[in-house]
Length: 157
Figure 1 (cartoon, rainbow, N blue to C red):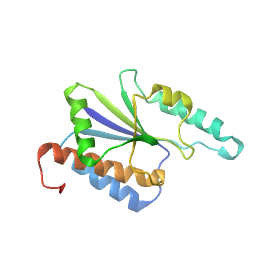
Figure 2 (figure 1 turned 90 degrees about the vertical axis):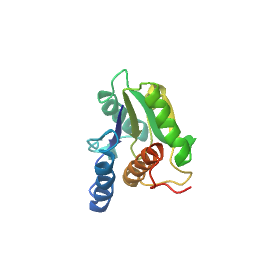
Figure 3 (figure 1 turned 30 degrees about the vertical axis):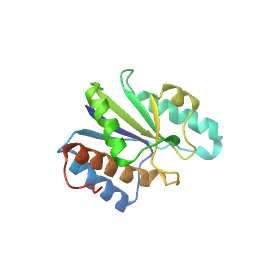
């Protein structure tokens, strides 16, 4: 199985890049993991929130295959413990999911068309985090989940 983290926009913050890269390097030992950063929209001040979400949806759809299993990282998604998230990943592996795509949307969330395409929604917390920081948190949680599945001592119960 391959996991893809699809993000709307890139980050310019070096500490976020460093933190994300730390976990991307660790993940190479467990699974194929790809970070795909979509180019940010230009001239968004002339667009309404709905127009911006629709344009972001176009970019997202260009990067999805019909066979991808899509999970939106969304504030209204299911909240899972690290152990339950590990169980979720394990079930996807056992179900022979080829490409599991997690998507971080833009600043206003997702267009309705993306919600309709999604197979699931997952929330990392009831708190709101910047879309940039979510990259680090998510990469760490995937790493944590895989160490749980391997029985390694990274996660403490």
